[in-house]
Amino acid sequence: RLRTAILISGRGSNMDELIAAARAPEFPAQIALVLSNRPDAPGLAKAKAAGIAVAAVDHKIYAGREEFERSLQIVLETYRIDFLCLAGFMRLFTPWFISQWRGRILNIHPALLPAYRGLHTHERALADGVKIHGCTVHFVVPEMDEGPIVAQAAVPVLDGDDAETLGARVLAQEHVIYPLALRLVASGAVRVEGNRVLGALAESDARLVA
Ligand code: GAR
Image: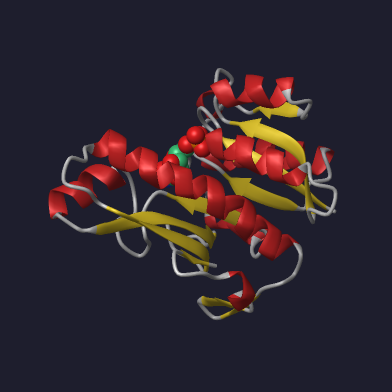
């Protein structure tokens, strides 16, 4: 099974779902480490309580991104990690770090990429008056919130929504598609051709595109 690290910065609800999914004996990835750039991230305590190895590499004590990433890399090598899942990890990587992990690193983003890259996606979707919003799991490339899309889920934007209610509706779908995407990638069920991820048709339904 693919030795996978989950990288978090905060509460880690997507992390929880990945850990739960990976407990199934036939799941093709095992969660071998949860790593945070914030030593006080609430998700770290939850992972530890779930019996997962945890580590923190505090970005604030490093002079620059390269130094921070070299420390991350040493921790990942120590735990013999083969695959990364970014789950609310709020740091950008340098091209050097991404090149170490190309094809072996997924991210979840709370919008239907390529719409709403960056932060405050729910506020911006509401301000634009869009009727459909959602979330995306994609391979990470050096450009922020770009890279081949593995899975997406769409949700309606309802009249009474604020960023909190819309965000909660999106988050519930994040929890569905991230384990699905990790399973597809870790099992080798999909292949990447240019910017497209192909081979997952059997998994798709009207709501989830995976
Ligand atoms: C999730 O909504 C995730 O999509 C988002 O942060 C949240 C983390 O929640 N990620 C980003 O905005 C990445 N730029 P979680 O810690 O409960 O999984």
